[in-house]
Length: 70
Image (tube, rainbow, N blue to C red; front, side, top):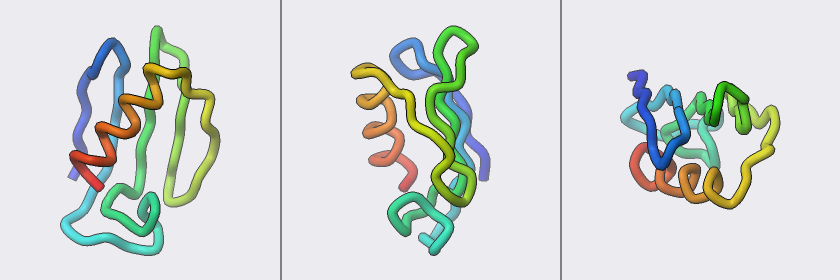
């Protein structure tokens, strides 16, 4: 299932499943996650970690998304 939205001014897209897997973040349910602000991609995970340029606010969004979907 795909979910997208805006949280605290950050846009996000995530693909998450009902059960965790080896491809998920920390073995969880999120297999894809992208976080952007002002059109700039700050974080990307696509069945494996790609990059993390999150600032303090972005890290809070990341934590919230893991709590929701992972």
